[in-house]
Length: 405
Image 1: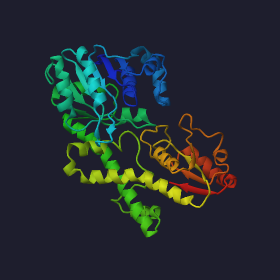
Image 2: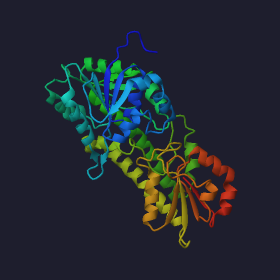
Image 3: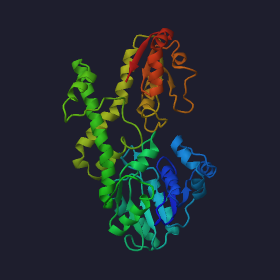
Image 4: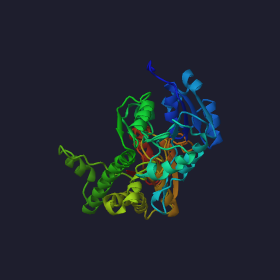
């Protein structure tokens, strides 16, 4: 329910992808007049038609609400507004192992002609520390307005979990970072209209760092699990059993090893910390190196398993970067299949969540005459069918070799 003290604002959201679109929908639902801006004209047309390009049932349900449809429009260029929210990608420049801020810079520059005194600019894109001060602030001040006085800037890192977008963005606590209290307060007012978690106020550099720390923490702990698995392989012991026993300790929580790290956050954000202080990011660098090597090791394991089979047929299941989603960004399973094919293997790759990669009918049909089934991503619907039909699946395979990761 909208607060009696609520004041509707005109909010322009630059970038209507995985981050910007959910924010735009919830701001519209809260009663704001929202303009989504995207350079992809197909996305613009889809939003104006009430059709979302992101397959999330909860988000589509929000889009279908009459109040939301009334409050949101999309176009290909910014316009004057009270608040501007930048939510464009910040990919990794692989060659430099550093952030590519070109889209953030382009989005910021596009706002300059439309800025006026009292505006608030919010950056949700994940960026290296000091980006707001050394990159965004000088760009915005080309407008003739001064950050912290006549123009306000805040960094509020996104909170998105593919597969559960709505719950994360509404119920998670949000970091609100800005150089001064006025800008922090203005940004907090915006997020308070739809966020039910706590709003945690800090400065902009701390906010930038906190977002990177969260994902780096995950990356380092995943790397530890993967490194334990490599040592266990050398020792010829069961890593699953070892982790289970170690985790009986009340202060130990070792993560299970996997096929690598995917998504648009965990495999990328740690590099942004190393970018600003490589001398003191040695553990972070080591973790990234360990996790980046995993797909190559998994592909090598599959290659060794089918060694001796003439022209083996491999079936790989799972293309998403995590279970029970269709998100394939930075997916290690996609890299594993690419490597296997580069070795010359025939690989049929399926994922029931990813459009165009569905099973012909069933897993059993997909595995006919196969020599190896590699279960790379354990989607629940996949594992339910596999566990129920394992005998039948093995019976239709030419060489019933099954690998689970």
